Length: 484
Image 1 (tube, one colour):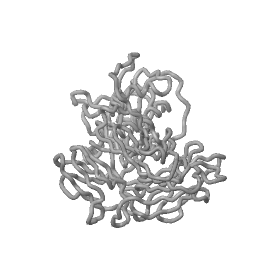
Image 2 (image 1 turned 90 degrees about the vertical axis):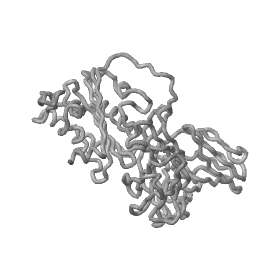
Image 3 (image 1 turned 135 degrees about the vertical axis):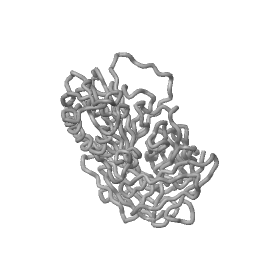
């Protein structure tokens, strides 16, 4: 029963092939480059290596024959850990967060990933992948290994077990990522006589991964921006807002699930004499109003802009030894990430002027420091944000007031295709109650990360059915969904 219960919240796939020199031909495709933010757990992932070798050399190194009448015991040695294979597994683990399949999000076989890292001199390659969500388990290597071990399965269900026991491989790399409360694991196997890659440090941090997606495999897109409005001063220049897409692709797990990804949009201004756009830079030309529109993945989103006169804008306070990618007051939906670049090698420190917003360091790449500000106060509350003690700008929490000070990342009407799902992120001090107002949608709690609580809503009604979603029993819905 224990194994059966796990199967309800997990999924596994395995794959193995002999490598040849042929190159597959693909029909012309529209390939989208997206940035997927995941958290790597490589210390935990690498701990599975010892489990695999203990398995290969222990008394349990067996699998069922094809008729399930006898056990086939194998005599195989230990694998070597390969850091090129680990890099492949890390890429594939991130890709499975979008499309849980041995077919990559761009429509190619997982085999192609083995040619993108290292010298590609593999005689045999194989892949095991697994996914689960279970808030009580978290990132547990033993749990993942137990899923792959398949001790209670018959032959047809022991593909992952046979991969781990195969004498066709002499090396392995392992990876784990988490995305929206779900853990995705990958084992990349290979056989090679080449010199192994040098060891690398285990990555245990948030990272943005570039993933290619075939547009034909996209099932649902909803764009959102890091700000809902912009207020600029005449003469001011700054970077365009960050844009995100809630994206669903075929073979997502769970079915119809949504991942938030970064995209590279094209921006236009409704009135370039007020606000002009050049590449990724906005410039406030004159006092007035305009609308910025971003187009990406076949969808668009608009942001109202107000430009006021009086004083020339600058992109950074005078005398600063840092540069911020965001410098104007704005309204934030839930949370927002800054990139603060040190210009003199020191570590810039970001702080909030009051308790309405919290600030945390999300990561660092070279001289770039990524700080996340999260709305902790009621909608409409604000805070000044400081870097190294100097005021940078003011942020204001968006959204309608919800009981308990809960902030939802979604407040606008949205549509979900029947059979698919959409994910809400609710930011609160404790887990809020979240409910659908009609049977046209089913609500499921996914998990939490810090003060963010994730709920998926599944469209199960008839096309055209509408449904309000309610937080903590509020009399008015925070958002309204429609079955598409």
